[in-house]
Image 1 (tube, rainbow over the protein chains, first blue to last red):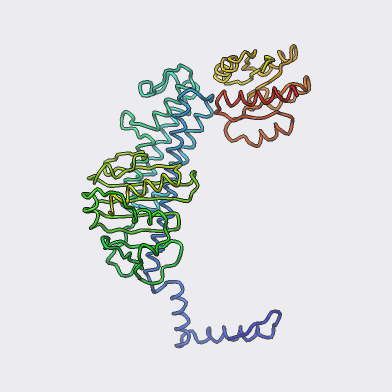
Image 2 (image 1 turned 120 degrees about the horizontal axis):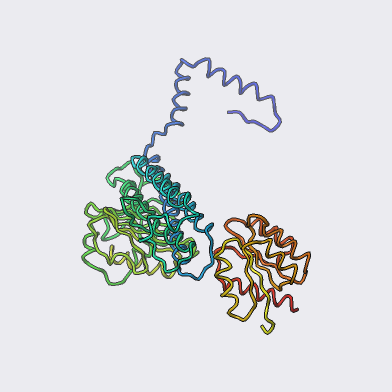
Length: 358
Length: 125
C-alpha cells in the first residue's frame, strides 16, 4: 500500500494514520477482520502442519537421546578398555567417568521427559537415586575405596592396585546388575528406551490431517513419508526412484534372499519414515509391536550409527545384523552399532531391508 | 637407540610411577620415580637427568614449577608434562614455557615411549 523509500520520511505520517484508523474502528467490521487475521497468524488453521512439526521436533529430540545414550555406552567401553591394563590412569580418570555418566544421564532424562512427559518424574527420580549412590559409595569414600564398597564381589579385577579396584567398582556400577535393587547405568538406559520408543508418535495413517507422502510400492501399502529436508505441501505418491534418503533406498532396494516369515508378517505393517538425505527414522507397527530403526549414513565413521528397537514378542533374532550390540529389556530388545563404515551400513541396511520388505 | 637415558618420573599418584618405571626400564633406560616433587628436584639438583616426566597437577609443587626449575638447572633436559582431564590450557602454557611435549592421562606407556624417543633424538641432534 505504501511504497516506502529509504530516507523518505514523508510517508511516515500516512502509516501512523492507517494504524490509527484501525484502532479507531476496533469495534467495526474492519477491526474484527484485523483481529481475526492476527489470530490466524498466531493459531494456524491448518493443524496438520503443527502435527508434522511435532514429529520433526520429536525426531530431533530422540536423536539427542540417542547421542546421550551412545555417550554413556562409549564411557563404559572406554572404562573396559582401561581395565585391560594397557593404560596408565589415576583416580581422577575414574572420578571423571562418574561425573560424565551422571551428566549424560541427566541429559538423557531431559530428552525422555520431552518425548514422554509422563515418564519425567520416574526418570529424574532414577537420576537422583544414581547420584546419591555414587556420592555414598564413590565420592565420599574415594580415599578408602578398597575396603568400603559393596562391590567387592562384583568388581572383577585381578589387580590389587587401588585405582584398578576403584575402576572395577565403577564399571560394575555402570554395567550392573546391582544387588538390593540398586539401579545401574545400563538399567537406566534400558528404562529410558522402554519409555521413549513406545511414546514416539507413530502417526495415525488414517488421519488425513497429517500430510504424508505415500510410497508407491507393490507390497507396502502402508508406508508413509515425511521429508525432513523440505516442507511437506501436499499429499502425494512417490516411487522408490524418487526417494532421496540413502538409508531408505538401500533398505527398499535390497535384492538378497528374504526371510519370508518376517517379510510376510511385516507386509501388513504400518510404517512412517522420517527422511533426510543421510538420516532415517523408520517407525513401524507390526502386529501391535513397535519397531524403530534409526540410521545416520553420512560417510563420516565417527558420526554414523544404527539403532534398532523391537518390542516383545521378538519377531526374530536374525533381524539384528551381526555387528550389533543388543540389550534385552522387559518390553523389548534394542541394538546399536556405531563407528560404521559406509559399506558396513549398506550391508546392515540390506540385511534389515531384506528381512522386512523383500 | 644406543645411549641409555636417565629418566625421572614425578607424579603424586603412586600408580603412575609404579607402572611407568618397569615399562620404561624394559629398553634398558635408567628410571627413578618420585611422588614428592620437592624430593625429585633435590635429586635433580644433585644429578641432572636426560628426561623428566612430570604430572602437571600436584599438591605442593606443581608441574609448571618443576618445569621452570629443571630448565633453569639444565637446558639440555627435555621435560614431558603429564596432564589430567581437561587441562589443555595448562598444557599449552607448559609448552610455551619450554616443555618438550605433553601427554594426557589415561595413556599407554608405549605412547609416552614414543615421545621420549623423539626427545632423545632432538637432544642428540
